[in-house]
Image 1 (cartoon, rainbow, N blue to C red):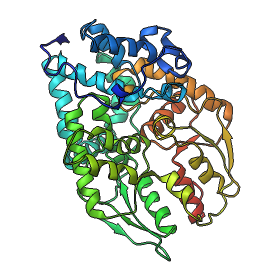
Image 2: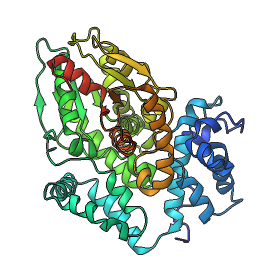
Image 3: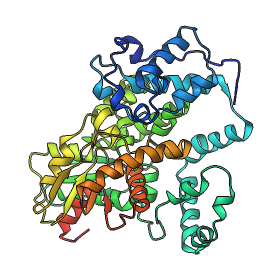
Image 4: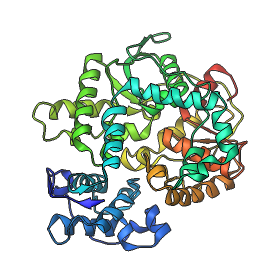
Amino acid sequence: MSLSAPTVANPAPTRADLTPECIHCGLCLQACPTYIELGREADSPRGRIYLMRAQQHGVIPVSESFVQHISACLDCRGCESACPSGVPYGELVEKAREVIEHNVRRPFWVQWFRAFIFKTMFPSRRLLRLNFDLLRWYQRTGLQKLVRGMGILKLFPGHLAGLEQLLPDIRSRKHHVPLGSVFPAQGEKRFRVAVMTGCVMNEIFGDINQATIRVLQRNGCDVVVPGEQVCCAALHCHAGLMDTARELAKKNIAAFEQAEVDAIISNASGCGAKLKEYGLLLAADKEFAERATRFSQKVKDIASFLDELPSLAKPGALNLRVAYDDPCHLLHAMKVSRPPRNVLRSIPGLDLVELSTPEQCCGSAGIYNITHYELSMRILQRKIDDIRTAAAEVVVTGNPGCMLQIAHGLRQAGLNQMKVMHPVELLDHAYSQSPP
């Protein structure tokens, strides 16, 4: 990595520039997973804000140290919930990463790989499906078992062996929801809603998308799956690729506008949080600013939508002990805490137990467990220790990255008997009276 002549020294101002500055009280420190693990001021929200302000005012350059500390942030936004001044840290760190993107020259192969992943693969449904079909082939043919058994991955540099262990078993998972579909309500129609299927969600957890649609139908909703929807752009914003993120946001707004729905439903909190922020992302765009705000106002997490219904269709009983873990972006960005718990408590026979620190990040954070594998695993270990004490049969959380990360941690800890599920999956099982 080397510094280049800045293309954009400081991108356009955001809401973060108009709010009270951080007063450096330190209340965010124990809410920050990287500070808890590393104990360094520069790896705390307050320390990173010092660095951001210093760079913004020309006191320090976009140095390798600056890049290191900003990149090490999970962007879990736990600090926002702890902050008494209301500093929108998530916007600040994404803006800092945009500065890095415009000022740092990476090795050619890194630039090419980032461009392929973020600008070519994620915006393309066809390439995404091809990628996951290749992963299915890798698992179905027995090649994965051979590679693991021979320890081939250990011969490669870095943490490739550890990263490969994160792969879920997707040999039989081709349950993706077809885009452009419409699913009619069961019984009396009360609402017309659209579902954001997501990228990884529809390829790895298509069964959860299907469960989401069935639950919405059961509760009187016509369900539309817009055919022109694309990636939500959350990962692009986390990586500082804001121009690509804005283009994806515009495509989604146009796609969902055509559906003419009462609500836009997300069952992945990372996606939902970004969809809720399209109004901020496109605030400077004359054509899309108002349209983006209207779009964001319609976005609902599936649990919030169900919890706000005048009456929820009565589910059957599930005799399970369940621990709920708050996805960071659902809790800290979307400020949704009670609705998932209320939905779970609506299921007769279900015993909901609370973790001691459900608000702490699991270390997944988009692709953080790929870019910062060791630190991600240290943060995950705290989560697994917490889950172990709950002695639950099922761990429930509402984000695909969290589900993959926690499932990996449970396997590593030998807790294979414990399932990881989405809240809407349990409700769907309760409606069909089938055990999960």
